[in-house]
Length: 131
Image 1: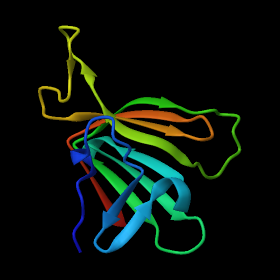
Image 2: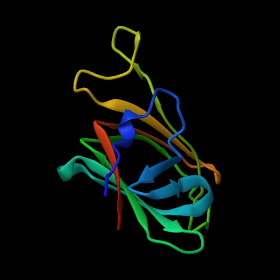
Image 3: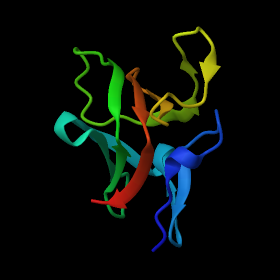
Image 4: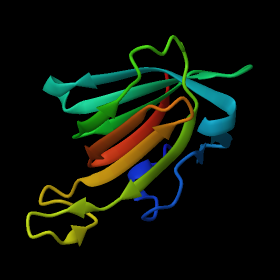
């Protein structure tokens, strides 16, 4: 099975749906995010998505990554979140110029959830897999 590197999506193009081998994955309509885990010693961030009705759990691993912004509503009793927007953006460099990558060849990603959560992650690669 061919596993895509989601970091290769074009700038500002939505990364909500993609193919894993012959299977079409739609993170917005067919899955709920139920866990986000940062593992600093491994330099990765992993997000887990449960299927809405049937299917396998999908995990998205951000490799050589750092969670730079995390906004959550602590009063929110929601167990699951719907990913509403996921795209690659630009860095603001120390020279105040915009760039697609930083000095480490990492890219900047923005994730927004229907329930109001917001994440920003820098990563060198993003690989989905069945968890």
